[in-house]
Amino acid sequence: MDTVDHLAKLVGPAKVDFQRNTDGVLVTASGPWTIAFIEEVDDDIRAFSIEGSAKLVLNTTAATQLDTSGAWLIERLRQRVEEAGIAFSHEDDEPRRQQLVDVIHRRERPETDAPTQTKSWRGPIVRLGEIGIEFGRDLMTALYILGSSVRGPSSNGGSGRGLRVMSILNQIDQMGWRAVPVVFVMSFLIGAIIAQQGAYQMQAYGEELLAISLVGILHFREVGVLLTSIMVAGRSGSAITAEIGTMKMREEIDALQVMGLNPVGVLLFPRLLAIMICLPILTLLSNIAGIMGAMVVMDIYVGITPSQFITTLTEDISPRHLAVGLAKAPVMALIIGLVAAVEGLKVGGSSESLGQRTTAAVVKSIFLVIVVDGLFTIFFSAMNF
Image 1 (tube, rainbow, N blue to C red):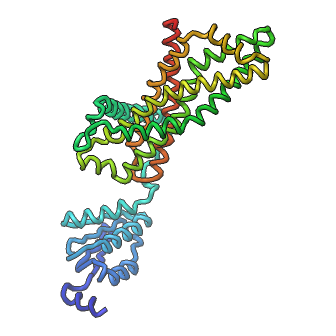
Image 2 (cartoon, rainbow, N blue to C red; image 1 turned 90 degrees about the vertical axis):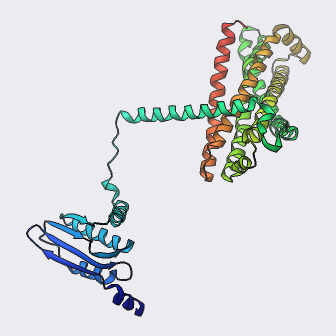
Image 3 (cartoon, rainbow, N blue to C red; image 1 turned 135 degrees about the vertical axis):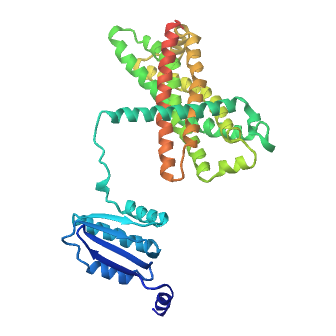
């Protein structure tokens, strides 16, 4: 308290003067309106009655100092006056102090003062425009990643130039070899289910052997590559997004750029190359597993021996059906890899953002894979292939 008294003697106490006139009330501030002297002024303002006034004008030009505490006091006076239905205005010749008061006022403004957003026909159109803009940005990022990846090993840049064989082999192990069990089991079960349902429907016509052709054509052309792509999108695509997103959160990507290395060449190129190598192989494995599942079911359910199954399959199924499915696989792999990489680079600084982008990568990849598969089907049907 002694320090405050000493300062008051040096700079003078904070004061407030009230003058009533025909227009309303003029409040004049003087002295230092700071945290050290504001208490007495606050008491005077609280004790002053504003009833019966039409307007209140606060002039702080004569105040020698004004800090945040003084601005809060002004804002509290403003709220009290406006709640009483009285017009309030603040005057000060110094722009910086006026800006401080305005900042406090905007911060304390009730949310009800903000314009309410009413539902209108413009909402869906605005959202559609936002989706279009986001799609355009994602497309540009994907094209940049694809263009940089086409350069291959040279996109590493800096002292780390060259094909990173060990990195590629590690990604092949993660995306390919370790995905074999789940792909094999799922494809085996799907092939068995298709064969059982096909044989069940064909029994009414005495044409159980047609179920073999059904399984072969359907699995080779559509189910094998589509099922494998969906599983790879959920497994490897999400892993790519999570890995790249975590590196971005930890600023490891920025560190690579500081070191003179291109993140696309170091991080994304090995993953894109690995997934494009693994998906066709996994698709072939899926076809084999699906046929094996169908063979087991046909033997148990219908009584067709494995040798009869294989003979019928090789006679009725052309190699072009297998080629159609395998031709789709690299394109599906590229889509999954690019979507996962783009979503990984969009991760913000929070774990919530990482989860959202990982989920978005899986959903977008599966959606695009199904759409592209449909386009391939229409194309090959039109070409009679």
